[in-house]
Length: 353
Image (cartoon, rainbow, N blue to C red; front, side, top):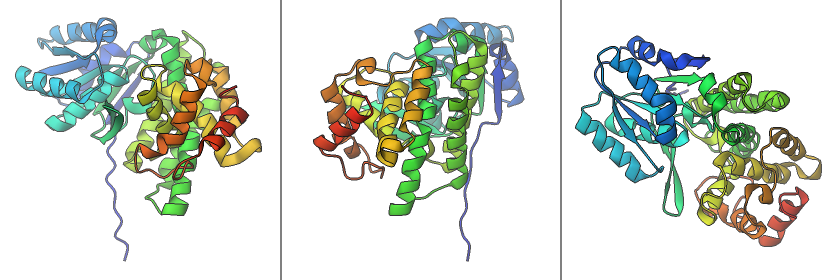
């Protein structure tokens, strides 16, 4: 007897394009959201987007509450929850990069109220997914939450974001290749829950970006358009799977361990990109797909070596040999690599010298 079922939660509205920042009030009306919003942002996104959007709301007689967060942490989530309750907010609007949006996402889930995602940088696929990622001491938690009710991504704003944030978003998407490889491996060896549809969508998203890597250039709205749509697809794949598996494998474990060993040394997307080079090598060997990943990253000015990440070789080796301990997720790393094997793959792929 067939008893399988699933409940896929996706954004109701996704608005991407030039000047759509001014559409936030209209989107709220379309969603029939009532009451006072709380904007969750950080200093630069506040100036670039939150303040102008607040002015649009004020023109309709609604004064949004605004909270600015400095770091991604559970303390910040708690601060947003307390601010929302004190302001009697009815819904949240995350305005900024991954930090503000993840915090708004997790706070809204706790408060059982909706939230909108208004990214100001195309830096990772959390802008649309149902997962929030927050560090907690020496570990990082990927927390299930509700996806945004709507996403409003203004390509004009995204194109003006620091170029390294966009290349980090690209690298995050390209790493879907190895995430899906790990997921399929875990399905074969550990019989984990697997969605062919979500895997195909995540993989196709990476392929489209790699095929168009030569078109991704600084300051171009067309580039922001391509990258943002890819991030949307990647986030939707996670919502379909109800798991971060379509976009998170050993390369993400490697990045999370780097966060512990060398905090703030490099951007998350850049770290997973370099991790993806090495884990792709582990999947395919000398003649595998790892060179395609490396070349695609290089073509968009994303790091491909430890030196370009600003991380020393020994830290890379330590991260590679210990990152399997971070969470119970089966990947190509299995129960861990020894130092000799880790050094070999890092050298063969040119990640270390």
